[in-house]
Length: 188
Image (cartoon, rainbow, N blue to C red; front, side, top):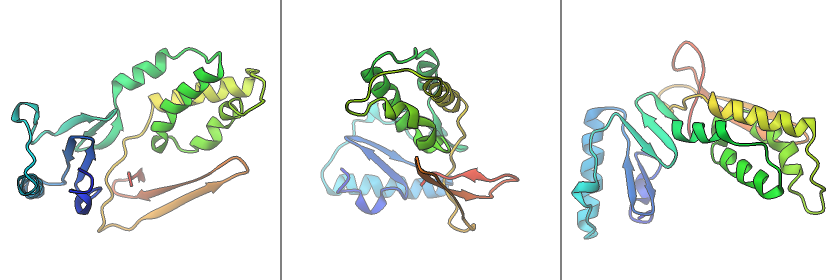
């Protein structure tokens, strides 16, 4: 599916295995995008089961995200599981939590710096000693995941600002646009 829709990926189509998400800025644009996708499916003799299709939605849950006219946010069901997460007691517990948090890293400014005390515990030959720094890291990641921003699609007609930060523990940058009265992180 990725090969078939290659020219449209990250422009107005997201494909995951056999799920296709079409997103657009306007209803007119969406009609055109939908037509293009359906034409390609027809040309490649691929079929979509109508009972599994949903059209013209203003909000959809997709791969742990909620995508709406406002932008992209973390699915509230995932937020609830983060709130219930108990303090890790083993390396496997840390890997599970960091794996979930890492999936949503684009929502967390300074992610690699915040997670550093936890990832340090997963290193080979590192004794598992839960420190105050680990506790702060765990709590901060939970807080950031449950109060994450809504990421917006970038507007190619507006100027971009790049915010960068680096330390000995990590490197990060964010593409921003001043679309409203305050800068909003954009999903790229």
